[in-house]
Length: 278
Image 1 (tube, rainbow, N blue to C red):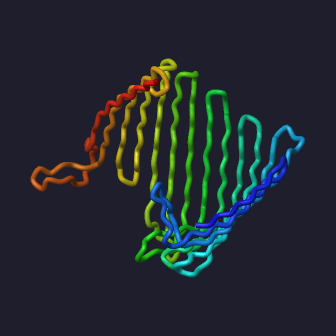
Image 2: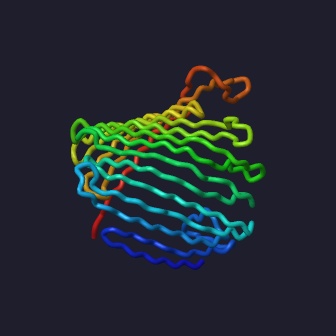
Image 3: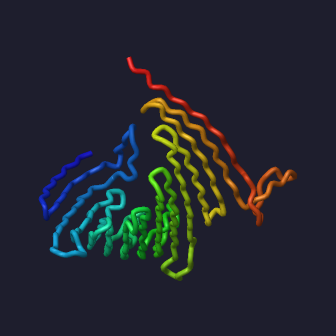
């Protein structure tokens, strides 16, 4: 492994340039490396402007990219991300992305080009909202039969905090992929997630999470109570369950698809830790 990096920054400019080389036999016993056998040159250049405007507090434009050689296939790939980011009052931000890139997978080159828009805002003191949408080319990752696809990604997150001790959030994530050759939908994936936390005092809090996975038609429900006496001395108690649209057959000794939900998993756990200083 060989790595070099250069960084320069001031009020207006931020430049980061690197060079990395990983052999095909490179391994890390204490961590996880997703890809080896590459030579990569990453580059980041950002310019920040501070206009005298009541609407925009700061405007950032940046280009993030990497250029890579895949040693096993001897193919080159590139990824270029051009961004315009508008920073406004109330922690509000509006961002526009243009993407031009490709990826080498299974000794083939696939397109990743597309565009994205994203926004965040603190609508009220008690209400925070963020969301985004992306349309781009993508890869169907199959070692034996990969293909070029395209699709949509969307997410929405809402946080409501009526007072300091109580917060509730709702999140939605959506992902789909179509085959480019015939425009046939391969699959779509939707997840709804709700989370509520009540901080009784500085020692005790309760948390509930409810999640629905539309792809697997599965509901997960989790409850947690936590008591922290001092940092390091903590007691946890929790309960979790899963519900799926299946039914159990005593004759076949296995589950089959059904129209109603059945509790398929449940668990309870208790954990305690004590910090002893000496």
